[in-house]
Length: 190
View 1: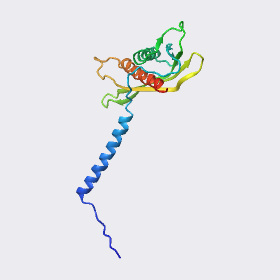
View 2: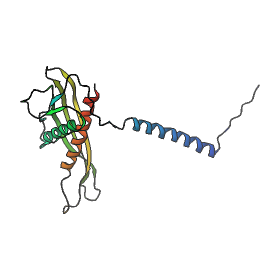
View 3: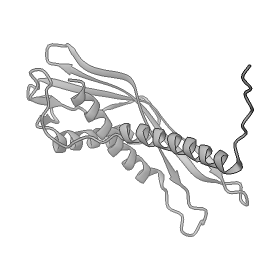
View 4: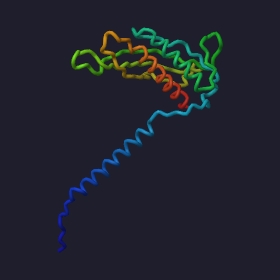
């Protein structure tokens, strides 16, 4: 009969194994973050079928948010012009190969954190949800997302004397990110 004895890890060995485990977890997290970082090349090669020109009308606004549709539409036009070789048309007077339609279905701000002394919101989240589709001149849907959303956090000033509204710059930031992601999704779908 063979005797097996219980070998207990010394404190140093336990620390080493915990460090090894922590290193493996950290490496896994870094791999996940690195592969999902959202990096896209800025090349102009686009493979949409038979599309050389895109008409981008101003998005519709089904919310009470002021000018959100104009800011988003403008950012999308700028992104299409800077990242693709499409001819971007702003008028339906010229025939386009496709039309990029968008509707802002929801836009709102909600507080995230509060100042413990004043009870006022110290940071807020701006969320914009849209319905977007790229439709060919023949009526065929080339790409769509009925729930395309973006959000950003921004800080609010607590000093009334130096206060300025941060929601408008936050909307500009969200519009740039929204446009970048939207154009990437459309271009990379093919």
